[in-house]
Image (cartoon, rainbow over the protein chains, first blue to last red):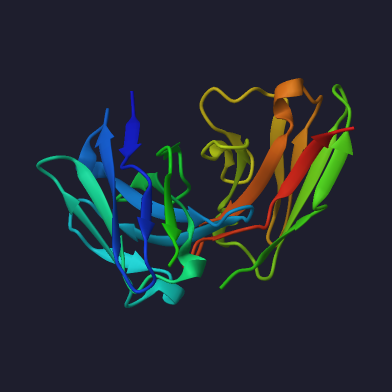
Amino acid sequence: QVQLVQSGAEVKKPGASVTVSCKASGYTFTNYYMHWVRQAPGQGLEWVGVINPSSGATSYAQKFQGRVTMTRDTSTTTFYMELSSLRSDDTAVYYCARGLRVAVEWGYFDYWGQGTLVTVSS
Amino acid sequence: EIVLTQSPGTLSLSPGERATLSCRASQSVRSNYLAWYQQKPGQAPRLLIYGTSSRATGIPDRFSGSGSGTDFAFTISRLEPEDFAVYYCQQYGSSPLTFGGGTKVESK
């Protein structure tokens, strides 16, 4: 069965960077896009970006351009999202979420990780 | 960027009643690529509907979706106790992918 297991909660100071990991299993790692979505406390869902695990190509929402980097390690079937220059309004739960097959569309999200709370506070 | 506006913000209903949620897009959603998710407190969202009206694997048939272009609807035919949650629409027809602000379905 498909599983996405994320790393644990993080507390960071403003200006620091954070890296969240997402270990994928139960399917062919390179066949499906992986997205990152965040949710601030009590707020809605916000798409951060997507990575093609086969090529490593990425696309980020404009508001995160220059601050976010998505990578993958095919040997360990793990995805990573690094967010730098953290601000207090980056405090949120960050989810990895599987998209569609890479030959198709970025798609909707059929499997989600459990979420990682990132708290930015001085 | 396509802005999705969900209404109402909150829907107060009793078990057994019908729930109808709306999702309106600021411009036409390509190929009606619209999905719906359910989220309960402390949990990740769960995919219910994709492609406007296709139910995801294992989703009961009391959940349905309809619409096209800029106007979409999501219906729960008869509310079960476990259906009280927040529901989000999401378009995946164009970049950036965007979500609506959510509709909370609460027990009256």
